[in-house]
Amino acid sequence: CATQRPAPAALSQLPAQYHVSGRVAVNAAGKGYNARFSWSHASTLDTVDISNPLGQVLARLELDGDDARFFDGSGKLRAADDIEALSERELGWRLPASGLRFWLLGLADPGRPAIWTKLSDANQLEQDGWTIRYPLETAGTAPTRLTLSRPDLEVRIALYDWQLASSTP
Amino acid sequence: GGLEQLKGFLAQTQAFTASFQQTVTQKGGKQQHAGGTVAIQRPGKFDWRYVKPYEQRVVGDGKQLWIYDPDLNQVTRKQLDRALGDSPAALLAGSNDLEKSYRLGELGKRDDLEWIEATPLNRDSGFEKVRIGFKDAQPMAMELADSFGQTTSIRFSGVTRNPKLSAGQFQFVPPKGADVVSAD
Image 1 (spheres, rainbow over the protein chains, first blue to last red):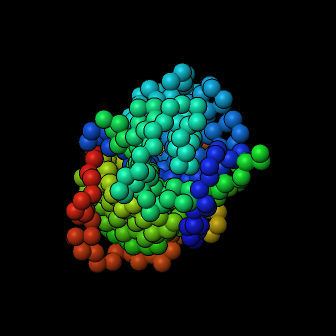
Image 2 (cartoon, one colour):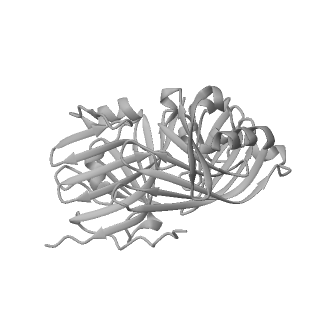
């Protein structure tokens, strides 16, 4: 069966393409979710599939430049002016999709203010009202663990099966 | 046919243990493999453990479903009857009367198994249809399809029918330090 490939070296900027699989555990003030997801980035299109432990897709997000599409479990397109608000309604927790495109790689979104802080056990990024922490032991490679938190919400993410196509300058 | 073998399974099998291989095939053909072990005790009890490529445990204790993810140190708890989408074991464990909660249809023979199709009557069960393949009145394979062209196929191997299982097998006690959250 698939053994986990080691995570590739960390990148300094968004590559032309990447794909990663992950698991997410959400704790929204005691109410919780556990899901799997896959994130595929290809130039301006990001496709995010959120699925149950069996790999059945429960929701699909498409970020295309600055507009976004959200398909629910039955494949129906829902209006998605604000992904975070819609994911809270559909999935029960806020999914900061536009930031995550960078954060999964351990990068801040270069287009918006960001504060990096080195903690004793993690590198911390604050952006868009979220606090993102990368455990120090994962430093140097594409992240394999990160947590995102806001006052009312904690999202823990484990990442595996990183596939990076380096961006051609 | 499959329906007859399903009846046989429901009548003869109180419990079984097996290894499983799970393959998720995306529309483009890309596949993801996972595997582990399962123990099922009817009604309503199962212990579905993913071992590769990551560890995750899905336990039905007869009343509730527990999903424990060690890497993420979180236990998610939810009502068993809403949990079918989380594990086919919930369906095989017959936590609810299979014939009353599903529309069942005969699909005939394929891959040396007799297949049936079960369509959950309760809409938000987490999946639309599941196909189960039987051999000698024992479920040996399951297939699910979602609305995005993805199919999940599960194959059981090393099946032991009606093994002696300790009651503790299906009692899930959240490990010390793990966060427990409810999904209901």
